[in-house]
Image 1 (tube, rainbow, N blue to C red):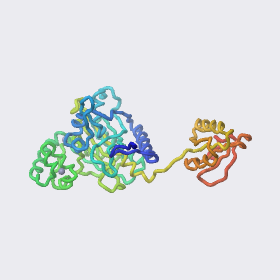
Image 2: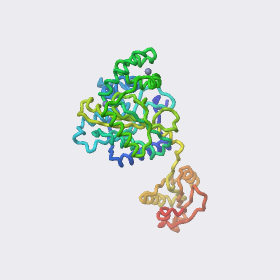
Image 3: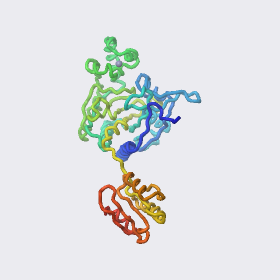
Image 4: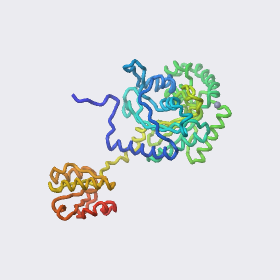
Length: 414
Ligand SMILES: [Zn+2]
Ligand SMILES: [Zn+2]
């Protein structure tokens, strides 16, 4: 009996894992440019955190959350998204007072317990950014522009940005009533889950995959209050001046309870569907509603698995620069020593088993994807040389003095 991954989970193997590393590296570089620093939060939190922040009428909490009772009889959940944990940490560590610029990013696994289906796993990786303490449209424009820069840097093409404003609690209060009246009048046309939750959360119907499209056409539109309208105007103007192309989509409402004012999604034509690769928005009331000080905030999350899928064509098997081969028993120590010297000089080097036959080692060298095989045998020991054999481009084997081999490789003389 062998043990397998749990249903809905997967192993990420090289070279696919290389793509993930590449995206994460690009993300870290962009975050550094924008003054973001990494925050690492627990994978498991109290279930209440997500119910209170993400919202108990959202799909994430209602249907998809990986929650259970632990041995201590506590209701816990494996995080379905990153923002609630970061907000909890922000409040718990009093970061509004002690944090530097309120900019944090995270990279890590998120979980959902929905039925496994093709291409959707129960654990997926998300990169997220949260910026606390800046209420101005400059923060909105900067956050969106950074997300686009990051995606461009990974090599994803055909990007398009959609934005909308959901207004503040004030403008939403009026809208909630208007929309609720409309929904009550048309309740027979709604799907069952929406019918059951319109009184608690009428806005969710707009985000419903079944009812959303029709409602986007017929339902009354949110009218922004003057400050919210001004904020949205300024955000759009700043995006334009930053050279970020975007489209206003009044139907964009996002499925989470905590968003206020600006919300956005980044899509790519390469995915073909309506699915976004990244999405986010402002959440000016969340920190306070979770027990912290009134703190404006904005953030986004990016689905790494999805971006990786888009970059799958660029996946390559990379090998080490050099592969050491010992052609005789006497040369084994010299080969092992050179291996260390190459690495110390910053040249990647690998080997298989110096005790195997020359033929077998050369087979491993070919399989390794290395550019050069460095062979040391009896002759080389006598003359103080290394036989250098290019493995990728056909070319002759050359004998190079041992003392020169590192500098020759560095000069790319092969
Ligand atoms: Zn407003
Ligand atoms: Zn519905």
